[in-house]
Length: 298
Image 1 (cartoon, one colour):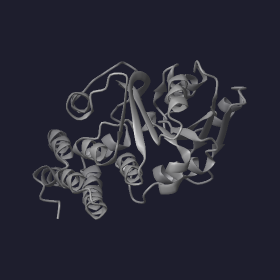
Image 2 (tube, helix red, strand yellow; image 1 turned 90 degrees about the vertical axis):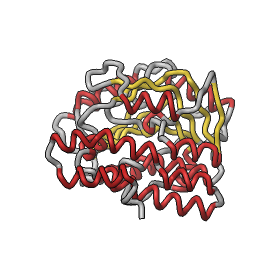
Image 3 (cartoon, one colour; image 1 turned 30 degrees about the vertical axis):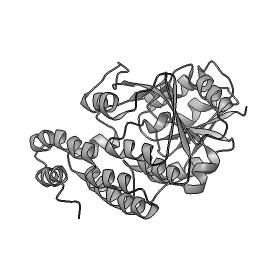
Image 4 (spheres, one colour; image 1 turned 90 degrees about the horizontal axis):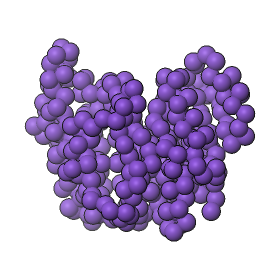
């Protein structure tokens, strides 16, 4: 088994980033390499990394801000091992993450993706389960006891009905991801786009119910900041239309239908309408309502 590359494209809160790094340092399995690519200008960050004294950790700061997708691409280009994680800058790896991922990969070396069990936490690190995450768990996510292998149109339909993945927690096969890359002009749907593209190339996903990762959901995330303006749903609309056309061409008509319906995305938009009204985002309110009604689809 090879070392696991953990890529951390960083921008934002220093303390949360440091907590993420410490969680990697606390792994029970020492066979990992952490690479942090700093897309910001926060002071003292380079000095903090210099003082860590762990040769498995490397840090570099971009000369210019590359943005979300640009920094993802740079991180992907720096991956050296056969498998990697694109960790969130404010998420937490539980001590058993690397151990669990490497055990699965030992049994399934050609698997394209591994989705472990995930616990959602709030900005303070307290376990939480809002409406979105309850829907993910109870309605959209497949029922898994132990491990479950999924692939093809079956998995595409499941994800397009409701995206139950936690992108920063997924372990990826490097060769597969480099073959398809990240799409242009996507941020909040970049994760789903990558998985659908990989499924179309024949890649498989192993899902385990063993919880190894904490995903932080809080109001300052990109998706939340854009939600009341309707920006994320404008992007989602473009994405679902494009994916539906691609899947039709691929012969996956049922998955294409699920993409055109994108019911969970429309329900999510509905939950954001009161906030948009409260924050007096009139154009955002109209955008959200169009998305809810499905009148923005064509």
